[in-house]
Amino acid sequence: MSEKERKRLVVLERVKSGELLLKEAAWEMEVSARQAVRLNKRYRRDGAEGLVHQSRGLPSNRRCSPEFKSRVLAVYRERYAGFGPTLACEKLAECEGIVLSRETLRRWLIEDGQWQCGVKERVHRRQRKRRERFGELLQIDGSDHAWFEERGPRSTLLVLVDDATGRVRLHMAEAETTRAALTVLHKWVKAYGVPEAIYADRRTVYFTEAFLHEPERRRDPKVFTDFMQVTDRLGISMIAAYSPQAKGRVERMNGTLQDRLVKELRLRGISTIEEANAMLDAFADDLNRRFAREPLRPADAHRAAPRGRAQWEAFFCTEVNRVVQKDNTVRFKGEQWQILKQPGAPKPGQQAIRRRPLFGEAGWFWKGKRLRTRPLGPKPKPASQQASPTSGGQPPRPRDLSP
Image (cartoon, rainbow, N blue to C red; front, side, top):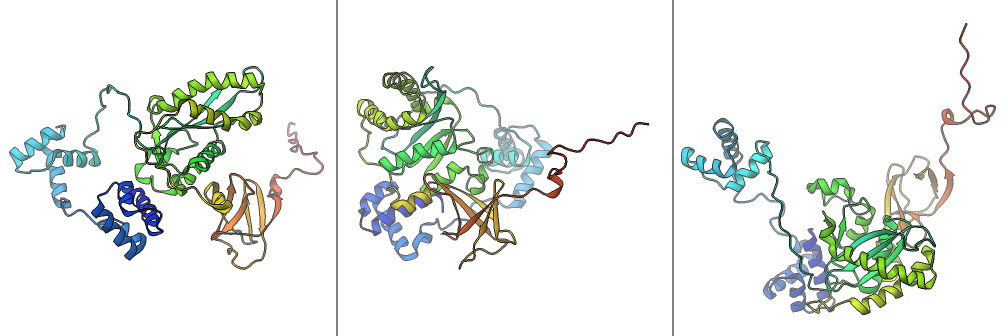
């Protein structure tokens, strides 16, 4: 299912449970009332499969035949090499009697390596309007600054700002790490609910190189970062910013905080990250009371937050897969665990999941159930890498072969 279809699934499930009226669901799905009735009927009849577009995976009825495409590319290669797509389309229609769209020809030529996309001229940019609903778009950034001045170490403040209202949530850490970013997102979801999208810069905390530079793989969980795995579970879209100006809302908030928060920490005599985090929620609430604005539309775009500790741990966690060895052990970062005998345990060769919740104890899981394991300590080194007991841990001295 596409992202839009998954959102429709959530909305129609709320309609089914009586939490939402169908006309309200139509407004949230941005469809007409009649289309909402059709979607709801298909969902009740076929379940989630009824929301998938009926032409998904089928070839277009208006596509050109492969023979026609090959003929056009051959004629272009022989007679019109170097022609721009627009001029080539005119000449193909005039001289060859071949009529097709210039954009179709442009796409074919780029795929065939006979044309390259030109560099666009610099565009005069203008200020982007705020999103209209609270929770429709959040901007996240880490601000590395001397927050404690000379009283403490340099640290990073994770800032999460709502684009429509300017509301903030804050968390301080030693660096902009996945765990720090998930902590500030956890604070937001707990306070307001699950937002629709997050705007972040292209740091490795938020995006992988494969995700950014290989658009065809952006639905593949293998190219997700740990942070993206959490946002994908929550149904939050991730948008990459290609310049600091693109996420100016959070950049300006960083400037405000580097003035106000530094002075507040100085007045309170705070010099450690732990003490700062203990007061940041109250500081953010006061900042919201002073500077947050009302959204253009009163509707809240947030979805309901997870319920219960188990759901929170399932959503806010990092996961890695490891193969179960023949002796029913699993290994991760030089450590190994013994999977104890139990019903429903994975067999050797299958993959168990190591799940580390944001707040809680890490453990091994199989098909959603926690496995009973026993830690075995570090993985033993091969005999060839172990130091000789008589050498005191030092490598043997080379023999003197000189005459």
